[in-house]
Length: 450
Ligand SMILES: C[S@@+](CC[C@H](N)C(=O)[O-])C[C@H]1O[C@@H](n2cnc3c(N)ncnc32)[C@H](O)[C@@H]1O
Image (cartoon, rainbow, N blue to C red; front, side, top):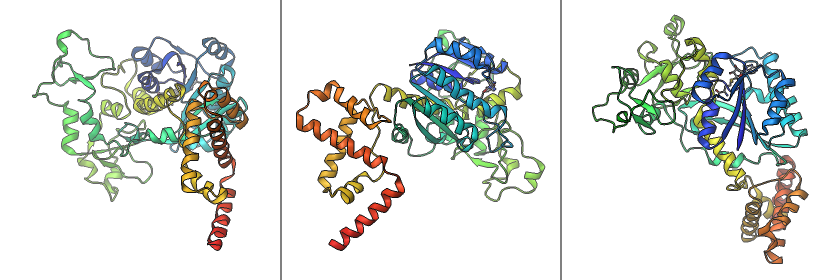
């Protein structure tokens, strides 16, 4: 799928999507350190431009004809750390929606802080996208369940033309790991997906990610990891102390062990504990803050999903901290990207979530076996539809009729599949509260009859 990225930053989201298999054809950002960092690490197809200037940008994007537009518009106006006054930066969420509705790609993917979900800017953007016929999946995902050692919660909105809302909910939930990733996992993993390159200067990193820009390589650099390899001194120090300090939000805990995910990375994550914190530490700190490690910029970047060797040399230290904090962690973007590509290829179908079976039993009088049959027929119909759901039920049934695999089925099977899909949509269309009330009444009637 051809992707255009808006608000591309230092390239965290691009890196993840490219790993998933997307072709990133163009990226935009207005901030020169980010544009230069993106150019050095991801691609030359990055353009410095103010995306408020829709008048100039929209025709370019329309001409590129992307299959998907992705982007994380600025979040400061919504974020917990900010003042939450919706100003010009919040308006860029509307600009994102405007550019999507003008270019009308089949898909879009937008990232923001969870607080954006209840903003006026998102309400306006959402209305535009719905009017333009996008079905929406709106989810808050915790990065630590998607290969990132960080409890970072973010809002992701995925849109696809013509879909029913929630069309990717179950598939994203299925992609979640069973346990969160910890910082210790990350320190161990560095050896897994990386290769060893002989450090050319003492104390420099010897491990480089396979898809990050490597140090100047010669063939002899690739050799098995020697048993004598010592971790970088900063990693060795972190492992030895077993805990690190990060500036807490409000009254939160400052010291974390390596056996939990790091808290959400912000620009000031690697600040030393202030005298106020040292004087009145959090009661649950596993070790005193004064003894905890202070993360290096390189470690913070890795916790945010950037590979070792990402070239930050275009920016000053403060700007690097900002770019790292801004990013979508690449492993999370990769996981979402894979879910999108699998659905596009018809390799996944939405799962039947909730109490459809109970509804069939109580409201339609289905036996257990009939419920099982109905569910498996609905799933079969969805597989024939290549995982597509449609905002319009009539359109869904018409598309099913038109699929090649459907028309060759025996008449009885076709009618069973149609009926199962209709029932599923009927159940989904019923407002949850009314559904629950009716189920309760039906259960009471059934109990009386028994
Ligand atoms: C949240 S960051 C995006 C980070 C990116 N998704 C990543 O994974 O690295 C938002 C980006 O929007 C950019 N930005 C802010 N205002 C802009 C504008 N008016 N036009 C274009 N880009 C803008 C900022 O420079 C910043 O890099």
